[in-house]
Amino acid sequence: MEAQRRGDSARIVGLYRYPVKGLSPEPLAEVALAAGGTFPFDRAFAIENGKHDFDPGNPKHFPKIKFLMLMRDERLARLKSRFDDATTTLHIALDGKEMLAANLMSEDGRKALEDFMARYMEKELRGSPRVVHAPGFSHSDAPAKLVSIVNMASVRALEEKVGAHVHPLRFRGNVYVEGLAPFEDHDWVGRRFTMGETRFKGVHQTVRCAATNVDPDTGARDMEIPRTLMRHWGHADLGLYAEIESPGTLRPGDRVVLDE
Image (tube, rainbow, N blue to C red):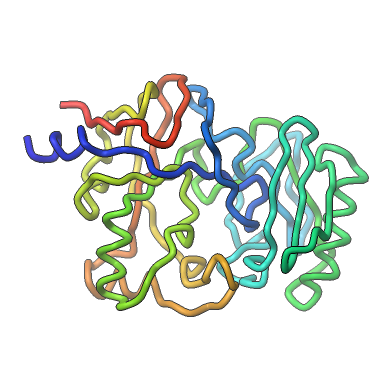
């Protein structure tokens, strides 16, 4: 069928993770995935803004409004971060200058990040910031452990309506895919497909919020992405959340194939 042929020609063109919720994306040359999991260290850390009630011993999902986040705190986009798995060290740069190197698995490192955010985000804070983490837990917007897939053709269709370039990283996806029709991935909810050697099942479309209005390079709130989607397509969805059903490694260039 036509959708199957398009799926056969689709390929991964980018892989990203976000070790600290709300901070910048980190490109990956490859990623090893486990069944039922997420990208390693994706949203592994978050920064509470207000009440300190996340319990690492009994982690549960909270709405993103609880944490520092791009939807409300666009100045975060000016910070460029990278995370070293081997040392669990977060590096933060501002305007090309490194401002922080902190081991987030240590009490001192988390305190260093909290102190930095207390200064940098002083006007946006509702109380003292607190870095939170629980082994194996992801502070994703989705309460389940899922992977976020962005269809580049959908981004280009949106660009036509906006009348300007739409940076794909506004959508903070894990996997970026070329070779599908616009919004074709929305039809993959409940269906199985493979990317590279890894098997997935589509779970639900990705509802977009005001965080996508923020330019990921400048931090400027310069577009109305959810409103534009709603105006032209009758929904605010762009992208697909999928569950990992089998382990495997993903790399840019891997084929994306929908099951018959």
